[in-house]
Image (cartoon, rainbow, N blue to C red):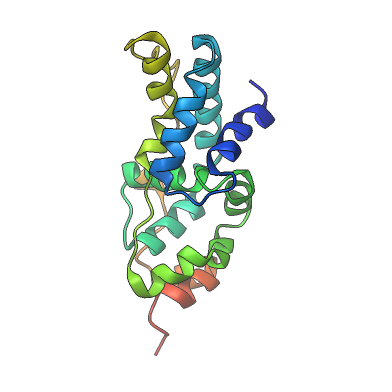
Length: 178
């Protein structure tokens, strides 16, 4: 599956109407379910590639800061939330995680405490495959989606390091330095 085809499914699931990530996942799965099972599997493999490419340490730190903590599963779910916001948001946040400070929802979360996770987005291919095949499970992936080893990450609780690496998000989510 081509990258443009992958993102077109997400684009159509968000077109012309605001939607929660869960609604995006539901719409995308419904669209994919109309495709051949092989195409659904290919879409799922492409999602795996997006997840692998976005498995960056500083993006995990941004998720940790924004969500008030972030486990390895939470990081996956945060990236699902990003995918639900489309190709440009994912690309920009992978390139420059601090750019997430530009998103109105993230800015609002600094005062509301909203947490951004979308596990349903990670299950779009599985849900579509089950719909298309009458309940069959999506074939196993060849390899799990890699992510940084939590033991090798820099200390996300180190506010000075957080301010150095993610100054704009730190300004939103951390207390000003004394």
